[in-house]
Image (cartoon, rainbow, N blue to C red):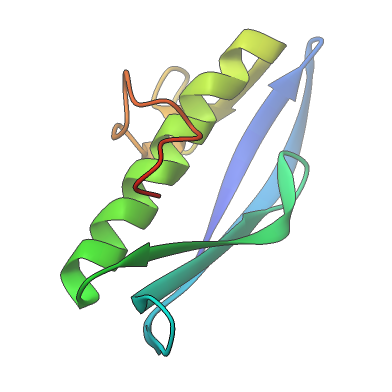
Length: 101
């Protein structure tokens, strides 16, 4: 799945594509989803869960937490309107390095 996001840093807005794949079986950790996003996280990040639903849930929460935490570094992310956090209104208050991710 892909979503085009608009990321603003220092008053300059750029388009970025967020890509998420999965859930897929993972021989070491049950199930996994992979995601990446141009500009803010171009490397693939894998998030695990014990089943398909938890892998998807943890991945969406991780993306949301990551986007919220990037605000501290001056990155503003939107999907349809300012302040919508790229449509990922998940993960508020969840540290991006949470141990279950």
